[in-house]
Image (cartoon, rainbow over all chains, first blue to last red; front, side):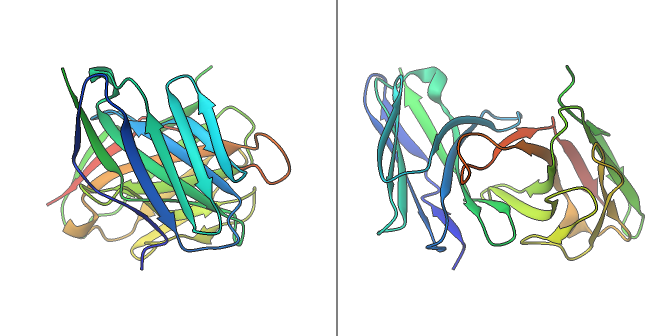
Length: 111
Length: 117
């Protein structure tokens, strides 16, 4: 089992809809969780971080964390074509101090 | 402010050749990472260095070696390149953000496209 797993997609949503991206992880001791966005041919960029159970909102983005279920998600409200990218979930493993990424979910927002 | 600088941006090797990918950061970060990215595989950790003087294996270390030359520089070496090492390689460094358990925002280099024929 991969340490961090995401649905690979592609996920296609119409403009203005809510896009929901999901991620599960295997280490119960993990404390820090991140969502990165990567446009084709570019480097990943951090868009959200979350450390506590519950929701964290930043503009159109909401990260949700449930440590009991080892589950983290990203909601994008009012999706725009410019949100079309690959979204990478990352989990920090305290043992060894390493950041592990999922395989990424490709999101396509159709005008 | 350059951030994380990787060289080269593109490289073509023949099977069995060796090469070193260079990475330098000017943000005084303690941690540095090397990832590879293949289609549908996300970013896979090759090696990382949590602090100057230490290096550790990641998810896919076979066929690679690293050197943390000083706090700024972290190089990745392919001793005998294989076609399976054709990939995009990203170097990254990290700074601690938030509280004691809050890690680790990564700053990425622009990547190296490596092809092994």
